[in-house]
Image (tube, rainbow, N blue to C red):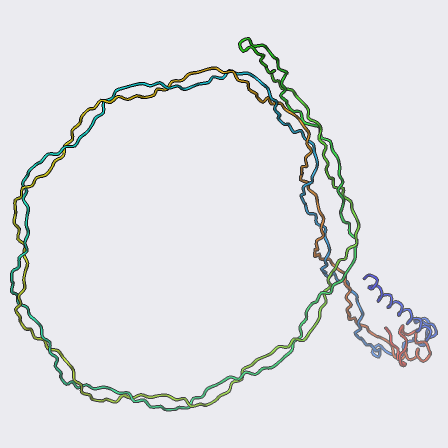
Length: 470
């Protein structure tokens, strides 16, 4: 961009140099007033006869403007990942084993025996007896009788009669009439117009650049871990002694004591991450905005009023009276007396005495002696010698290889596209106006131009026999 800005300035300097050389060659190499004769530049006219003219010229000015531009680049983001790394280790496994040991015990044997025992008991015997009891009771006897009762009722008798009634009705008579009504309707007219719309498009520009990428590899490292110090229970050797009571040897186990023992070392393998940095070439895409124009049609609707006359029908109503006669029914009620007879029931009660005999139960108890025999249990004990085998525990240590996992944390790089903004210089070319005034004495310039010394009167020289002084 800086080189492009200096190109117009260099071009202007080259053109100015070339123009000066041509003027010098055309007018004998004179470039100022010193080459003109004295009589040519002598004042031959007054100040009022001097010719003055001003004109507006334009020159090109270059200005640098910084504009914002969005571009897309890749950014390295590190994610923390936890993974389980297996490693092999050896650990001590203590296993309890048992050995058989014989010993003699005296075991009591209990035996249950039975003997017969005779005893006497008294058993109650219950017997139910009955006796006759005579008693008198009074029993009521109910009887239903009827008697005649006379009563009077009044019965209504209804009779329908008719009478004539005169009434007047109003009957509506409808007539249809018409009248002229002016109405205004609107007609829609459609017109298509166009308008110029500017829109911005983004053109992709692909650039390649070299970035540093963090990578690495896993290396396996073997590490020896010393075994832990544990407290172990050790039993001393036992002794045998003769027992005169049982006439045999009895084993007496030794006492137990605690001893500090160090376990064998453990060898484990672990993986170590060795990072390194590599340079890789990636492609970045940035978008350049470009303004485009297009014609968009749009429709303009306008309503045009139209006046029309139409006939509107309307209905008129008038009422006409009419006389009618109708028969109206009415009901006449009169009461008639009647005598009726009905039977009314009533109840009578009589008491009758009766003699009845019933059996009344009573209970008699007698005591009866009985002889029984029962078995009574008793226990006997007898000592029996028995050989037994018992399990004596002892501890055995062995090494077992196991695979365990430990959690390791590592950073994994990944590329993320990020939109950034940067300022890009842009050169704007614009025209700036300025005033140029020409002042020259007509006779002097004409004399100089006639004598062939136009370049001495003006830098620009004579044009068409006139002196143009700048």
